[in-house]
Length: 199
Image 1 (cartoon, rainbow, N blue to C red):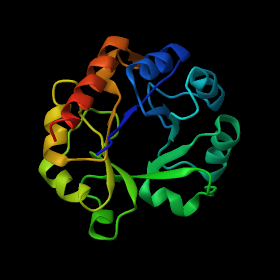
Image 2: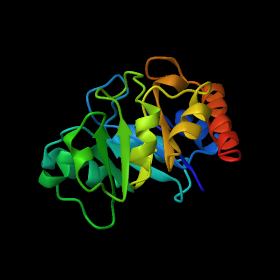
Image 3: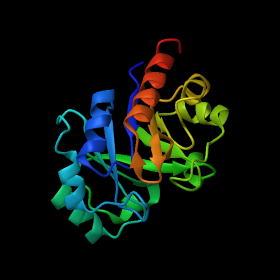
Protein backbone atom coordinates (compact mmCIF):
# COMPACT_ATOMS: atom_id res chain seq x y z
CA UNK A 1 0.00 0.00 0.00
CA UNK A 2 1.26 3.46 -0.84
CA UNK A 3 1.67 5.29 2.42
CA UNK A 4 1.42 9.05 2.79
CA UNK A 5 3.90 10.88 4.99
CA UNK A 6 3.03 14.38 6.18
CA UNK A 7 5.45 16.75 7.86
CA UNK A 8 3.47 19.31 9.84
CA UNK A 9 4.20 22.64 11.45
CA UNK A 10 6.48 23.96 8.70
CA UNK A 11 7.32 27.63 8.98
CA UNK A 12 9.96 28.50 6.38
CA UNK A 13 11.21 27.71 2.90
CA UNK A 14 14.20 25.99 4.52
CA UNK A 15 11.83 23.69 6.45
CA UNK A 16 9.87 22.93 3.31
CA UNK A 17 12.99 22.22 1.26
CA UNK A 18 14.16 19.74 3.91
CA UNK A 19 10.80 17.95 3.92
CA UNK A 20 10.67 17.81 0.13
CA UNK A 21 14.25 16.54 -0.13
CA UNK A 22 13.46 13.79 2.38
CA UNK A 23 10.47 12.62 0.36
CA UNK A 24 7.41 14.06 2.13
CA UNK A 25 4.05 13.64 0.39
CA UNK A 26 2.26 16.42 2.27
CA UNK A 27 3.32 19.64 3.98
CA UNK A 28 1.33 21.00 6.91
CA UNK A 29 1.09 24.69 7.78
CA UNK A 30 -0.53 25.54 11.10
CA UNK A 31 -3.03 28.39 11.31
CA UNK A 32 -4.29 27.45 14.79
CA UNK A 33 -2.88 28.71 18.09
CA UNK A 34 0.59 27.17 18.32
CA UNK A 35 4.30 28.00 18.44
CA UNK A 36 4.21 26.79 14.82
CA UNK A 37 1.49 29.19 13.73
CA UNK A 38 2.04 31.06 10.47
CA UNK A 39 0.09 33.66 8.53
CA UNK A 40 -1.27 32.79 5.09
CA UNK A 41 1.41 35.00 3.51
CA UNK A 42 4.17 33.27 5.49
CA UNK A 43 2.82 29.85 4.51
CA UNK A 44 2.69 30.83 0.86
CA UNK A 45 6.29 32.04 0.92
CA UNK A 46 7.45 28.93 2.77
CA UNK A 47 5.71 26.62 0.30
CA UNK A 48 7.43 28.09 -2.76
CA UNK A 49 10.18 25.40 -2.98
CA UNK A 50 7.62 22.59 -3.03
CA UNK A 51 6.63 20.92 -6.31
CA UNK A 52 2.91 21.25 -6.96
CA UNK A 53 2.35 17.49 -6.71
CA UNK A 54 3.16 17.63 -2.98
CA UNK A 55 0.04 18.46 -0.99
CA UNK A 56 -0.11 21.77 0.85
CA UNK A 57 -2.25 21.32 3.94
CA UNK A 58 -3.91 24.15 5.88
CA UNK A 59 -4.06 22.92 9.49
CA UNK A 60 -6.74 24.70 11.52
CA UNK A 61 -8.83 24.12 14.64
CA UNK A 62 -12.33 25.54 15.06
CA UNK A 63 -11.76 28.43 12.62
CA UNK A 64 -14.44 30.96 11.82
CA UNK A 65 -15.47 30.80 8.18
CA UNK A 66 -13.97 34.24 7.44
CA UNK A 67 -10.64 33.09 8.90
CA UNK A 68 -10.73 30.00 6.66
CA UNK A 69 -11.68 32.10 3.63
CA UNK A 70 -8.62 34.30 4.19
CA UNK A 71 -6.37 31.22 4.31
CA UNK A 72 -8.08 29.83 1.21
CA UNK A 73 -7.66 33.07 -0.75
CA UNK A 74 -4.10 33.92 0.26
CA UNK A 75 -2.51 30.50 0.66
CA UNK A 76 -4.56 28.37 -1.80
CA UNK A 77 -4.08 25.05 0.02
CA UNK A 78 -4.75 21.67 -1.56
CA UNK A 79 -6.20 20.32 1.70
CA UNK A 80 -8.06 21.66 4.73
CA UNK A 81 -7.38 19.74 7.95
CA UNK A 82 -9.55 20.67 10.93
CA UNK A 83 -11.78 18.97 13.48
CA UNK A 84 -14.58 16.97 11.90
CA UNK A 85 -17.35 19.09 13.42
CA UNK A 86 -15.86 22.29 11.96
CA UNK A 87 -16.75 21.43 8.37
CA UNK A 88 -20.47 22.04 8.94
CA UNK A 89 -19.76 25.79 9.36
CA UNK A 90 -17.13 26.18 6.64
CA UNK A 91 -17.48 26.86 2.91
CA UNK A 92 -14.95 24.49 1.35
CA UNK A 93 -14.77 24.38 -2.45
CA UNK A 94 -14.70 21.04 -4.22
CA UNK A 95 -11.17 21.80 -5.39
CA UNK A 96 -9.90 21.51 -1.78
CA UNK A 97 -9.57 18.07 -0.19
CA UNK A 98 -11.03 17.59 3.29
CA UNK A 99 -9.08 15.83 6.03
CA UNK A 100 -11.36 15.86 9.08
CA UNK A 101 -9.55 15.37 12.38
CA UNK A 102 -11.11 12.71 14.59
CA UNK A 103 -9.74 12.64 18.10
CA UNK A 104 -9.34 9.62 20.34
CA UNK A 105 -12.61 9.05 22.20
CA UNK A 106 -14.67 11.19 19.80
CA UNK A 107 -18.36 10.44 19.29
CA UNK A 108 -17.65 10.62 15.55
CA UNK A 109 -16.08 7.16 15.80
CA UNK A 110 -19.52 5.65 16.41
CA UNK A 111 -20.84 6.76 13.02
CA UNK A 112 -19.81 6.45 9.40
CA UNK A 113 -16.31 7.77 8.88
CA UNK A 114 -15.09 10.02 6.04
CA UNK A 115 -13.14 8.43 3.19
CA UNK A 116 -9.94 10.09 4.42
CA UNK A 117 -9.39 11.41 7.94
CA UNK A 118 -6.67 12.18 10.45
CA UNK A 119 -6.74 10.36 13.79
CA UNK A 120 -4.89 11.69 16.82
CA UNK A 121 -5.04 12.23 20.58
CA UNK A 122 -7.29 14.70 22.33
CA UNK A 123 -4.73 17.54 22.15
CA UNK A 124 -2.87 18.43 18.96
CA UNK A 125 0.87 19.05 18.97
CA UNK A 126 1.46 17.60 22.43
CA UNK A 127 3.19 14.38 21.40
CA UNK A 128 0.33 12.22 22.69
CA UNK A 129 0.20 8.75 21.20
CA UNK A 130 -3.11 7.00 20.65
CA UNK A 131 -3.88 3.34 21.29
CA UNK A 132 -2.42 1.83 18.13
CA UNK A 133 -4.41 -1.39 18.39
CA UNK A 134 -7.68 0.55 18.49
CA UNK A 135 -6.35 2.78 15.75
CA UNK A 136 -5.90 -0.32 13.61
CA UNK A 137 -9.59 -1.13 13.97
CA UNK A 138 -10.45 2.41 12.92
CA UNK A 139 -7.99 2.29 10.01
CA UNK A 140 -9.94 -0.61 8.54
CA UNK A 141 -12.91 1.73 8.08
CA UNK A 142 -11.25 4.37 5.87
CA UNK A 143 -8.02 6.02 4.81
CA UNK A 144 -6.68 6.96 8.22
CA UNK A 145 -3.69 9.25 8.65
CA UNK A 146 -2.21 8.46 12.06
CA UNK A 147 -0.81 11.32 14.14
CA UNK A 148 0.26 11.97 17.70
CA UNK A 149 3.52 11.06 19.39
CA UNK A 150 5.13 9.48 16.35
CA UNK A 151 8.89 9.69 15.87
CA UNK A 152 11.66 7.90 13.97
CA UNK A 153 11.98 5.29 16.73
CA UNK A 154 8.33 4.25 16.99
CA UNK A 155 6.77 4.97 13.59
CA UNK A 156 7.54 1.46 12.29
CA UNK A 157 5.81 -0.12 15.28
CA UNK A 158 2.85 2.24 14.81
CA UNK A 159 2.57 1.32 11.12
CA UNK A 160 2.76 -2.40 11.86
CA UNK A 161 0.14 -2.15 14.63
CA UNK A 162 -2.34 0.25 13.03
CA UNK A 163 -1.70 -0.17 9.29
CA UNK A 164 -2.71 3.41 8.53
CA UNK A 165 -3.00 4.99 5.10
CA UNK A 166 -0.56 7.66 6.22
CA UNK A 167 1.44 9.07 9.12
CA UNK A 168 1.88 12.64 10.36
CA UNK A 169 4.65 14.16 12.47
CA UNK A 170 5.46 17.60 13.82
CA UNK A 171 7.16 18.08 17.19
CA UNK A 172 9.26 14.90 16.94
CA UNK A 173 11.23 16.31 14.00
CA UNK A 174 12.22 19.48 15.82
CA UNK A 175 15.42 20.43 17.61
CA UNK A 176 13.40 22.98 19.64
CA UNK A 177 9.69 23.90 19.68
CA UNK A 178 8.81 25.16 16.22
CA UNK A 179 12.31 24.60 14.81
CA UNK A 180 12.45 21.77 12.29
CA UNK A 181 15.58 19.62 11.99
CA UNK A 182 16.41 18.30 8.49
CA UNK A 183 18.17 15.21 9.84
CA UNK A 184 15.23 14.30 12.08
CA UNK A 185 12.81 14.79 9.17
CA UNK A 186 14.83 12.45 6.98
CA UNK A 187 15.17 9.84 9.73
CA UNK A 188 11.40 9.85 10.29
CA UNK A 189 10.54 9.51 6.62
CA UNK A 190 13.17 6.83 6.07
CA UNK A 191 11.80 4.84 9.02
CA UNK A 192 8.23 5.14 7.73
CA UNK A 193 9.22 4.07 4.22
CA UNK A 194 11.21 1.11 5.54
CA UNK A 195 8.23 -0.01 7.61
CA UNK A 196 6.04 -0.04 4.50
CA UNK A 197 8.21 -2.71 2.94
CA UNK A 198 7.53 -5.24 5.69
CA UNK A 199 3.87 -4.51 6.53
